[in-house]
Length: 272
Image 1 (cartoon, rainbow, N blue to C red):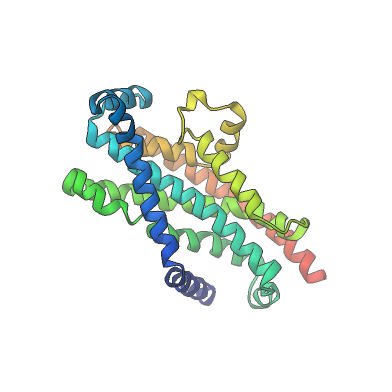
Image 2: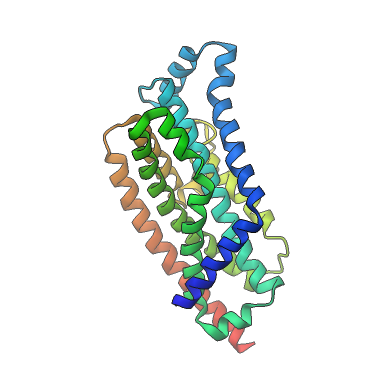
């Protein structure tokens, strides 16, 4: 198990150095998005009106710093969901369909063990890399308290990303072993925005179609969004305890389902 973990960690950091420009884009675009969410409407009316409307929208009291903090945190969850789901699914797909290393993996370890380690380690490594831009900005906005906010938010993101990594394997295993799909990104390009929209990331949850809500509710992302509201507004941490309970239940369920699917897939591969 340790050797598998070392191999995954080495691969991730090698890919980080190779695709550094992609990560730079993932840092710059969220900054522009978060600035646009707050300051573009402000250019049409006034910052005070924007802050008031955002407070009514999210149901919490806020000032301009809180409004920008919320916008910044939500760019983080967009990055985490998009990168985790697409990367975990597409990497497994590439390894077992295109790179032809699946047999080597099965010779070295059990498939269920490999995909679990892959689903946990990859998000834990990638999440800090795609959300690093938030640390200096929250520190600038809120001082030392902003740094504490970042650490709490980062912990929320990392826990969510692990659950999403396991969630992704539930889709990846059937795609790899039971379908003829050759372009897995068509699945991730639909699933990711559906989850984010259904969680109320783009628009108020009251305006989200029921179908998208149901998609989002198969993940812990809606509770993650509520936890981010709590951190940004410095409110009562009840949402954090609810988030923890739902996350624990979801993670256990994902482990059970992905483990069952991977064991069946392994039996199929070993039998030829």
